[in-house]
Amino acid sequence: MIGARETLDAVVEAEIGYLEAMIARLEAGEEDPEDFRVYRLKNGIYGIRGRPDHHMIRIKLPVGRITPEGLRVLADVAERYAENRLAHVTTRQAVQLHHVHRRDVPKVLRAVNAVGLTTREACGHSIRAITCCPYAGVSPEEPFDVTPYAEATYRYFLRHPVGQNLPRKFKIAFEGCATDHARTPIHDIGVVAALEGGKRGFRVYVGGGLGAAPMSAELLEPFTPEEDLLPTMLAIIRLFDRYGNRKVLTQARLKFLVKKWGIAAFREAVREERRLVKLTASGEDLEAWAPPPEPEPPRLPSPPKKPFSFAPGFDAWRRTNLFKQKQEGFYTAIVRLPLGDITPEGLRALAEIAETYAGEIRSAISQNLLLRFVPEEALGGLYEALLEAGLAFPEAHTLLDITRCPGADTCNLAITHSRGLAQALGESLAALPMAQDPGAKAISLKISGCPNSCGQHHIADIGFYGSSRKVGEREVPHYVLLLGGRTREGEARFGQVVGKIPARRVPEAVERILKRYLTERQNGESFQAYLDRVGAASFKPLLQELQEVPPYEEAPEFYQDLGAEGEAFSVQLGRGECAV
Image 1 (cartoon, rainbow, N blue to C red):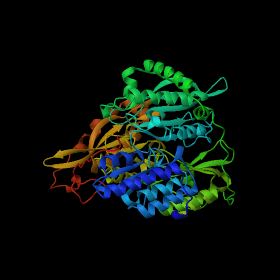
Image 2: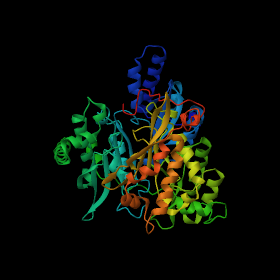
Image 3: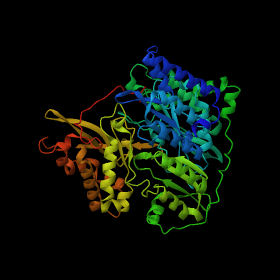
Image 4: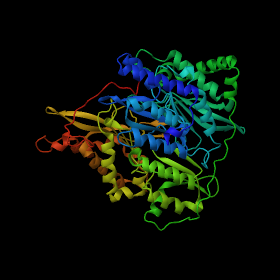
C-alpha cells in the first residue's frame, strides 16, 4: 500500500515538504493565495470549478510509460483521494485525479513519485509532458525506436532552469512511424525519426498548436543528427524564453513567434543559438546530448497458451484492438477506456493482467492504455482476462472511441459538460447500424468543452467544442461543429466550422452526417476524401433545421446540458489555469 513505498528522492521530498508548509500557512491565513497558486501549478495541481479547497492533480506518465506497480498506486490514490474514484487518462499521456482535497494533495504526490511518476511541470508556463508514439519500438513502419530519445529529452528538461518560467506552456512530441500517431504538427516541437546515409537523425518541426488560433508546425530542418537533437531543442526553447510575448497571454505560444519572424528567420536564429549552446556546454550537459543507448528489452511473460477464445465478443475485439508488432509473434493490445476513465478496480485488474500477459504498458493520446509484447499464442487468454475485468471494450481507435476533455465537470474555462455529450454520442452510435460500416468506423470524433481544444476537436474528422446561445432570457448549451480536421507528418488541417448545434441535437446531427456520407460516397471513398470532394460547407443546409431551439415551455430539456440534467444551464466561467 501507499505507506510502504520507498523513501523519496531528497529533491522531490523538499518540493512536497515546501508545498505542505504553504498549505498550512494558507489555511492559517498567512500565505498569499496567488503565490500558492503559482507554486501548485508548477507542480501539476489545478483549481477545481467552484471548490477552492479541492484540486485536480495531473500525473505525467513519462513518454507514456507506466509499470504495473504504477497502475496499482494510481488505483490507491484514486480510491482514497478522488471523490469520483476515477483516474482520467488524457490526450497528453498523463492521468488526472479530480476533486482531491487540498490537505490530501501531498499524500498523492508522495505516492506517485515513489513509483517513478511525477506531477512536476504538468501545468503552468513550463515544458509539459513530452509525448511519444505509443507504437515506438514495435511498429513495422519506423526506421528506429524514438523512445530512448524521448526519454532523454524528458529527463533533461524536467526541472531544467530554462523551462521554469516560459512565456507560455510548451509541448514536444516524438514520432517514428509514417502514420502520425503522436500528432507532431500540433506541437511546439515535433520530432520525427529520419535516416540519412544510414545515420540516425530527425526531421524537426516547430510552431504548431491548437487553441483559439490553431497553427500547423513548420519544418525547421530536414535532418538534425541525433547528437544535435537536444542542443536544437534547447536553442528553440531559449529563443522562446527570450523573445516570446510575455505581455499578451493569448499571443504567447511559440507559434506566434514563428509566425511573426517567419520560418526562414527563425531557422537562422535557431542555428546561431545552437552554435552558442554547443560552445558553452560542458560536463553533464554534453553527456545528456550523447545519443542514448538502446533500451533493455522488456521482461516478457510466459502466459498460458490460449491463442483464441470462444467468449462473446472476441472476434470483434480482435479486429479493432490488436496491432501486429514488428517483433515476430507479438501484438500490442489496446485497452479502450470509454470516456478516458478507469476505476481503481480496473487499474488493479489491468496491473495483474499486464504482469501475466504483457511486457510493457503505455498510454496513447487517444486516452487508451496499450499492452505491448503480448504473445500471439496468449491473445485468447488475454481477452478473457480483460472481459472478466470489464475492460474488453472493442472499437478502439474507431468512431465509437470518442476523445473528450473533462469539460465543465471540473474545468474553470469549460462552457459545456463534454463528458455528457461523449456519453450520449457513444450510446446513440452504438445503437446505430450504419456506424458499423467500415467507412464510418474509420471516422474520428473529438469533443472539447470550450474553444481551447483540450479534446483536440480541431484535428478530428468530426469535432465539437462547447458554446452557448441565448434564446429569450435563457441560455442554451450548444456545440460548434467542425468537419475535416486531420494531421499527417508536416501538415495539420483544421476542421471547418459548419454550424452551431444545440447540445440535445448533436447526436442527430452526427447521424445525418454519417447517413449523407454513406449514401453519396463513390467507390468506397473515405470520409476525408468525400469531404475533400464535396466540401465541408455543403453540410450546412443539411444541418440548418437542427440549429433551431424550441421555446422553453415546449422543450425545457434543451435548456439543460447533457451530463447536467435537472439543472438550468448557464455559462459559469472561472479564472482559467490551463494558460498559467
